[in-house]
Amino acid sequence: MDCRPVIVWDVDDVLNNLTYEWFKEYRTAHPEAVTYEQLSSNPPCAEFQMELSVYLSSLDDFRRRRLAGLEPEPEVLTWFRLHGYKFRHAAMTAVPAKFAPLSAEWVLRYFGLWLRSFHFVPSTRPGEEMIVYDASKADFMSKIGRVDYFIDDNEENISDAAAQGINAMLFPRPWNSSSRMSASEFLKQIQ
Image (cartoon, rainbow, N blue to C red; front, side, top):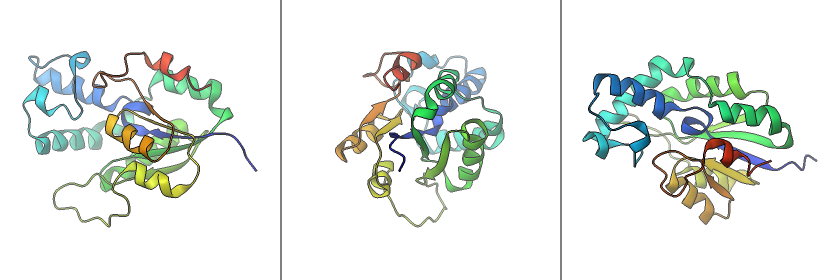
């Protein structure tokens, strides 16, 4: 029996830097926008005075065009190379169902040496019909068995998982006011 701790990793904005890359493209067309470091929410609709549906449509278009070429978060990939073998790993993302295959392919291309399972909780879009098995990532994790660590950039996901008794850790991003360390400092907590 493998006794290594199990880590469930969020994909977007933890294993990769999707919002930053989307934002760079967005800011090219909107130079008046705040800087990435000034983002205080995700989704950043308030900062851009943008309707959620417009933001999601823009993000989905970016995913469709650019996800395959997105580079992994360098500090995270370095951590996996140095410490990944000490743990068992799974990926968990909230992504529209039509982009789940792209996301899974991306995860396995860059992290397949360590990540052996990919899970998603569909992020629904207008006009999509999905069978709802789980309302959140925490709901899903509560059903799959042992999860020793859950790493996500979304404070609500972290709170939900912690309420289920999961050791949930908030990955540092500008919109996380309670996490002011660098990615490297954060990852040193898991060795």
